[in-house]
Image (cartoon, rainbow, N blue to C red; front, side, top):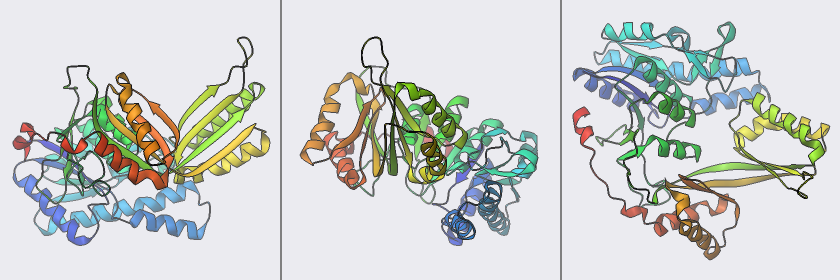
Length: 422
């Protein structure tokens, strides 16, 4: 008998027929003797619908009420799932964030979990009842509802699994697992039977929509056994490993991840304006946004510091949230240069020992030259080489890199551990 935390996202919860199919899947697992805790997202499209309603009422809705509104999506899906489970003879009980005591800090729209009521959840499990927990939400100061940001149900599931010391956290998706790249762009993409937690984090940080990167970092910290599973097929999915099985220090390209709808922000200030730049960094911190950034200093000579250049990359939704604070900063300060580059995409080539072989970077540059693709930036690290390009070049770059590095030839081996749990 194993204790599993199973998370189902909006891509699997597209209609009531699929809700019933998931309920039958949960019943099948409980009939095998497994204890199951379920974490749900809202039905597909529901969160966007609620955001649209909020924006119709107010262009800048109060964050507290905004979170309370969005949280109703997960509450609806949890109640519907319990109804579907009970109809087929499975004892189940819905738990919203307050009932499960998923406590967070006070940051609305970007809250972080601080504690979970482990005894409460386990008491329900031991009563042979399936707890169906609302993902994406928590309880902040003065019992206000908070939300964890887009993809926050992943964080809820991994936090619950870590708290309960579950035997496995299963993240269900509408595809077979994690692929070498998006099969919708590259038809020859291959399913990866296993992936290291470091590479999963690189996937998430690079924009792949498999999981929220905060949740992967949480899984890494607590070493939560995890698998990315297909919802509606019998595939074994992708197992996440916590030990790198590559004993040799050899370069290996494994996958391509990308993120669309990115915005690049570039600001330059003089050395005497460095405090102004620090004030902007404080604004970024207070916003609670996850913003990739780098600061470069141009030295005039060996004794005098030169200009400071701040470069940030964030998705368009987050930029819209941050723009008001940025505009206020711009009216008070006078940077040397200020640029916003829209409609860009981030493309990352993922693997191991990527910077030991400069031929990889050379091949990427050659692809750019051959297909007239200019890079806004290109940065390499041990596990990834990341490019920022105009979004119109995204698909051709992904396809050509997939072909260049022969990712369609990755050897797919069956994971022996899958047989024991399916």
